[in-house]
Length: 604
Image 1 (spheres, rainbow, N blue to C red):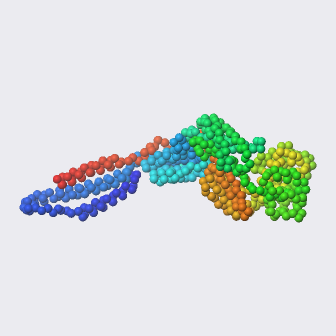
Image 2 (tube, rainbow, N blue to C red):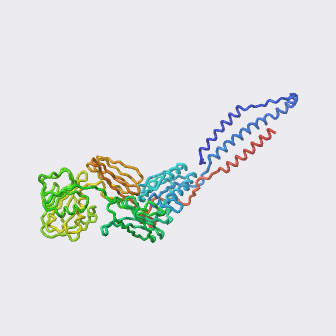
Image 3 (cartoon, rainbow, N blue to C red):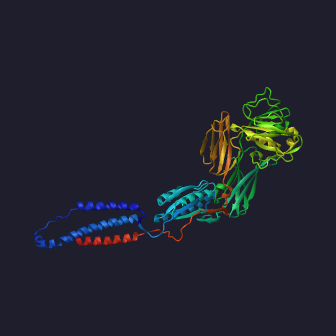
């Protein structure tokens, strides 16, 4: 026998109370009578009835005692074993798509929690329940609990993330939990159709709710004015959707777009008379299933003005390109002799021998001159060779860069140690290499003269110089587009006094400025802001965090095979314990009737 509510046994404290009442209860009653003759006359009859009288008093006490015990058992809910014990293990998909709500405003995750709570009712019948929260960082929420109140408390406190579901880690955690169970039964509540399952039951919470996602935003220039193009998709339903454009938080345009279910579409906005902006955001105003993918923002880096020293006897090409960037304050000198080299963010030496390196800032060299330690010249080549990027190499330096038909007529190969990174080559020979030093400062060297190539005549020349400046001048943050679950790396600049990040919910994260860099895991969508303060003021950069693309429409079957290497029992009953409260209640009623009958006969 097992008690489903052991706290009810506290009612047995009524037993000593009953005993105390009988001990202090008066055993006779004083009544005025006219004569004792009848008592003396009936004395012999009273002696014959005395044993019966004593038995009747004991009987009443026993009946009342048994009634107290019966009431205690009713409150404790006794049950008897009639089946096999199960250890339920529930995996709750806590990815972003599980936040999708139906017309009643209830999310898939809450429906899964509700079904888990219904399953938890069985723990009152002898089973146990474990719950794994399967988010981007799966965790064991409840382990082998048979307390209904504890399970409901933990489930009510559980929340869904905005990242992906790490099914591999969740399955590994489930396997570890299964290994500690005698008779496991595994259930996975998710909103995806998996290609195959083994050792567990998958319950799909996807009801094909309607959702519109803004999947991306790009900016381009047409007739010297920016054009913003957003990508949208309507999932599970054709719909007319209201789409708008916000510039720095202010709505500047809106229109209605007809979307066909499952087919991506683009919508463009001309931003007339727009000279500067920090953030541009395409958004929809629809009561769809998932609100967190209803906008997408494009953030421009606010890097301030770069102080550039250009040492060149023929500065036309480089000076024109730097001025075209719009964020460089250029100082031009013919030689480094008697020139103060400190105080600049970037020093560029164009075919000029530099007698010493600056005390601060990055350095960029063009031409066949002395190189810094760790970098040497290889063979000199005097024939036209195409200038190309490094094959198979991925770098932000290549963003928007197109070299076209660029050729170099004279160059030398560069040979560097492992700390030097090649960026451009002639054939297979590196001709532009870079190395990062403490604080994000860089030394870059190109082993060719700009006048020995047609590079300044190419449309990609300004882009190349822009990317070199961006690479050389340290910034708090290089990229402004991130996905939930990624880790943002912030560079701590040498002059930083304070560095912190403002999150969309208003919270602020402070960082240690003594480190070279710091990391910020992003766990929610929206526009974030990184701020650095210096003695001269400081700078900030906005960056946008969006949901992982696959979370907006998880209906497609996943390629992952879900499996657990366990043998699950079959045919056992969920009703491991059967309550016998009805029989206890029947006994209680019988005792009550007997006790009332004895009392009535004794009184009347």
